[in-house]
Image (cartoon, rainbow, N blue to C red; front, side, top):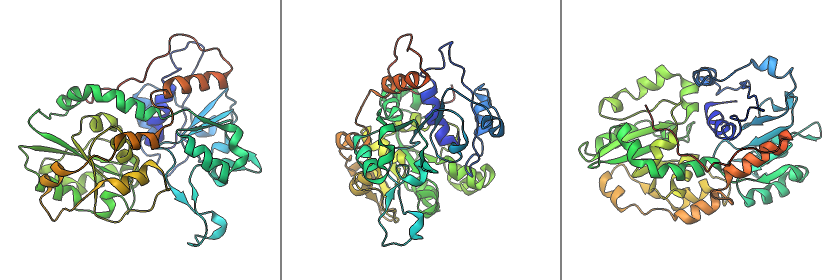
Length: 369
């Protein structure tokens, strides 16, 4: 585990095999600037957590990772997957020193992340989409034998969770007479929260409380980089006006599945929401360019723009939903199949025959239950 985001993704995968009596799951937290809160969260789940220094001395039958820091130190066949909606972040090769004229690469599918000392690190590189295989072939052909397209388990669980929408809304106190507006922000100055500091208060104040409930999902890195106390202080006025602010350990999919609208930036939550058929609007503030053809790029191009200087409720009511089918097609090449494919992959890497019945993607837990 590197962060709470990668932690949630890996728990989805671990859940597919950890009930098998032949499998012992051990967790560790790699050194990472965004690792705040991961140890505590894992221990709250009852997980067996070993120190990183111990983990890199031991040998394991398989290591799962959803980030790249320190993975070269592990002594195990390695399966690496994205921790968000595919691979949409462009980066420039370090040898160009940030030269804007240099050709960009897609983060996570580049040699800098996948190759060390001439050796491809992952035994299995888990991809969500065939498009990513094409990018990998161009950027890091040596890693092609490791590539496997297994879909997106996070999206599959979000789709399954939409059936429990009423239960989620009841749990967070949203009745049938109000619309739930979820504001999603990734981390950094280009995120909605960092780029538009008064956005939360403006939206809460601009929507009638008898008709709307506003909830903010801040990327766990926001909490990790600034500290819970600071985030709590920055959002005090908005919370006093009625904003709901889940903790970074809460499963964001429950709140998105319950939403009537999502106001989001270039982060993965916006892409997942659009693919699940939820109307998505993006703040008017500038957004970074994303990998062309990625789900994030699709949302930035097709989501309605929210202008906070004009009446908000009318903009919500008239906001078109970015084509959910097309958004989903860009997100995963194996819709509804990720649980089966990932389970088969993990058992294959462990060298074990799969036992028991395969489960479909489960809805996420009702919050605060």
